[in-house]
Amino acid sequence: MAVYPIALDGSVFGWATDAKETADVLDLFYAAGGDLISTAAHYAGGRSEIMIGSWLARHPNRDRLVIATKVGKHPDALGLSPKSVRRGVDASLERLRLDRIDLLGLDGEDPSTPIEATLTAATELVAAGKVGHISATGFGPEALREAVKVARRLEIPGIVVILPEYNLLERRQYEQELAPIAVAADLGVLARTPMANGYLRGDFRSRHDKPASPIFQGALKYVNRRGAAVLSVLDDVADECGQHVGRVALAWLLTRPNLAAPVVRVPSARALADLLPGASLELTPDQVERLDRVTDY
Image (cartoon, rainbow, N blue to C red; front, side, top):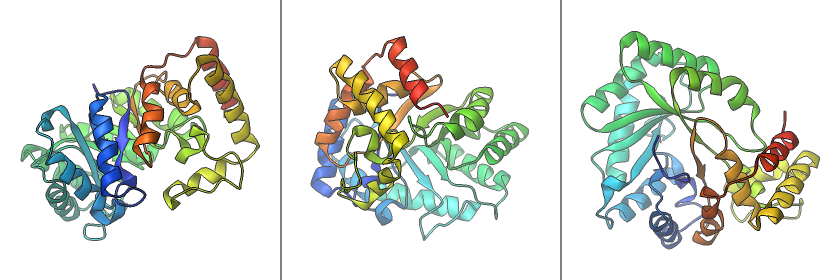
């Protein structure tokens, strides 16, 4: 995927950020050269898509942007049955005020629906011009391998991008289980939760540091000995680079092979500004090795 090295996660829009702050975040991202905005039909009950759609309506350069959303978890279109996928796409297009979703995500496995039926429905949406490409989020290795196999058998594009959880503290599943499939099938990779819900920004160094929004609550599980060790090395590398620790965490991700971009989730334009320089920060081989070693599973 040829995109700006940092993508934007819209899960906070309409929940942790109001309409004005959301527009400020999007304006800053766009001005910095960012192009991939990722959301989902169910984020904030659909308000994330509505806010992005409202912002898009004020920007004429739509073709410079890559708009990604996911279907499968909105209560009006649950699961990945052909009916749910079609209904979910139509509703997302309406909320986003678009006639095409550039990257449509299948949001989680659906054991009740054969993947062949899901991929066939999604491919029909591609043929109809409503969808550009298909991605997968929350697929385990067996489900992803089966999806790739089915697409080859049916001779359809199928899934071309995956969005695994991947950061300095969450490496095992992607690197051991999903990366080999992605490499073999030539899939693009976008890393979700690259900041470990804010922990790798250095926002939570003790149990007394409470998140401003429940959406960042997951960061607290890293407030332990391992998390502190990772932050210690991040602090050292950040001091050497003269950079914010979050930028170093992003720069480490951008050294990973086959990764197109981390998808950052930020509560404000100020927090985004703190991270954007990470897109161009280059770490030395020694710094990368030290970060690899402290987070080795």
